[in-house]
Length: 177
Image (cartoon, rainbow, N blue to C red):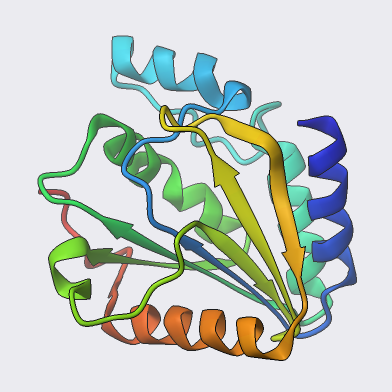
């Protein structure tokens, strides 16, 4: 997603205080990780080398953000038992943490009373929401991203993220079921 990636990178590069990411799908099918996911399915081995060609762009981007003092948090809502894709994500999360992210997991059964947005999102500095749009099979839709800055939408999304974050389990304590 070259055009959209540039937009996301620009927003993260411009962040000064915080960047939070809410993930709510059990399966993603985005093309830029398809080969890595297939390799993991076949071998059970996940690339967790932060210096590998697969991870370096992400690690560099996050490292620059955290070096500026940006707090980066990622919350994942997952169904249990988890899908193979979530197992794959869980196996790669040590690299997210290495890059400076804080990551928590929340079983979907613990979200029934939360009001959640309809799609994944990023919130930058509590002022911009970048909605991530996917197709039914988890690939990027067209267009894949939607930036919103209306204060009411930003507040609703921020409140939803914080409610998830407060209930979620830290990566080091979350056991895959």
